Image (cartoon, rainbow, N blue to C red):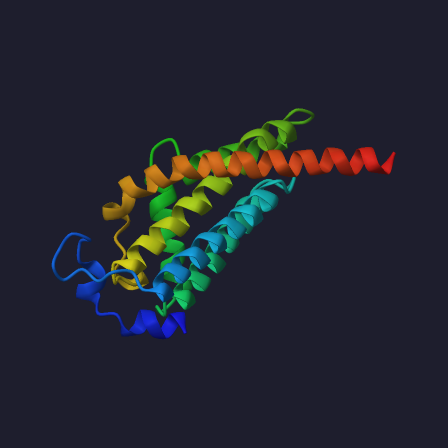
Length: 195
């Protein structure tokens, strides 16, 4: 039903600013879709944080990218938009790789620290889950914003969305840190219960 609603919206109405005379008030379906999208993104952030814990360097990055692609596919379905895996990979690389300090290079470097004997795995465990979760959150929010404005994967400009991505990345870091803390607390509780 949400896909039918999304398909019936005109791009002009979806892209109209909230204070313009042509702006359409959110419908119960669109509000519900927004909630579903937000919860979906959070579920994929959880999955990305979990995947980044894998102790195999670079496999963790590949797993996170696969999770992000699946999230984009599911968001595309939710909004009734077409999906392309190759374009999805391109957008992920453009967004994550094009933001200095938050890029794919940083994630790869952190992943490769797992190769350092002894402390390497611990160093990767400290920062990679937060980076993976924040990137996943930011990519999800970029797609939701773009889809809500009437766009699709074929006309998403990473350059135009870069500032929004950075803003959402910061929000995603806080969310990913909470997820990571909960996972660590659950692991400690599991160990305590086992003894």
